[in-house]
Length: 387
Image 1 (spheres, rainbow, N blue to C red):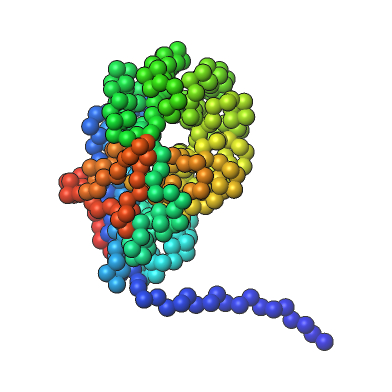
Image 2: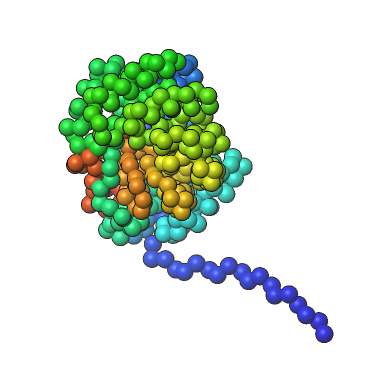
């Protein structure tokens, strides 16, 4: 008697959809900053001051008349690369069902498989992925946070833009006052100068100005080695910091884990990572108390949600990096402690403004991300294409 092994069945055809992607458009925009910005990477000679941000916008349109807006970004370098890769893979979306976001993310990754599943390749995909989620929420008539399943209608927020090392201490203190008057709930300042004593004096001045108990964070932007991070971290303990951010190289999971296990002050890191897999490496080694993914950098909302699930499973807090207009919605959908970073840099690109109240940023009631591009954005557009 002959037996046969069951043969794998063919994938079931996708159900019919009432809507399809009819077209999309791309734009590469260079957003100028009011003044050059420097953190520790500039003071240590590793980078030049930041003068502009390159933003990649994607608009996705459907046959049913729906539209979604998404974006990604690059600082100092990478804008033309993001645009070129997005331009090459954009036609893959035409004719597809916009609701199949996970499948479309995979399709775009495989379209550029030879250039990898992290870094610039997925950062270009992020603009499409965010646009698809925005479209889905708009079509449902819900803010993105509500579509994802919000745990709160407002998120604790802290300001970073007023505390760069290129800003004199007197101006930092004035910025602190202005931020608190606006309704900011925490202050982060940059550290990591070649002279650690200058850092400690700066932190001491800000802590005295804020008073005890007001949330204060510091960010070293990867500029310490392991011995320096431990030594300075111990000296920072007396300032009752909410966290110390990026004390070591972004990929030094082992070093961050040792600091997190040794210091009383929580460790935050992750903003420079460009995939869910890289974040899992940090999370599984206990390298941070606050996970800091950046949705445009990791490839969009789809991989960001995977990172959120890993962080939640590990009992960690969440503090997404930059792009508050997007991360507010994601942070609102996280069940544990979360912060959103207040950076007003991207505000000129949009007509809408986020509301601050009593130390928290309010989730807007508008559908999707609740964003529309300002007229000024057109003047800053360097390249654009329609498919």
